[in-house]
Length: 114
Length: 111
Image (cartoon, rainbow over all chains, first blue to last red; front, side, top):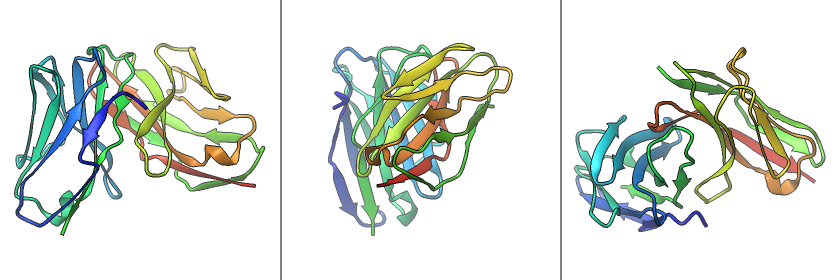
């Protein structure tokens, strides 16, 4: 158990819909990262937050947005969903922002768009 | 930019065989290097890491040495077990930003 929790574990929805994925980091971790894992793209970084502020953006679509709340949990919002958004979405957390810090991954949310 | 290239799988080995999974990287400066493992149906777990040149990371019988001269971080284990069957990801972190992952190498160990 990494200490990072993600809900829900599975999500099935239809094209055009909007969903929210939730992540609680390990106690004491200030950085939260979101990654997407798909068969064709592999593991892709989406976005990073540090202590409530956006710190870095990766390959995140404009239809996707995220935020980190004062209690440090984070939410990833996916809207106008398309079939190609079906993937495993991981949240990870680390203490701060130093490159040598370990990122601890949650169990993921599996999203299926029908 | 940063990138990681690792050998394509799947790799199939018999129990107690020697394992090597190659990983090379491209990065500016001095990144930190990681190996993560993903067991079926689970999230990623850190297997080992190295933060500077010539460092050796080790855990559960797995080892990898940070070779700056060859920009490599190959994963090795002397004697694999069936329970090592998983997908292994090489990754780097540069300047405290997100991890750049390789495509992953699937390992199947047969009894």
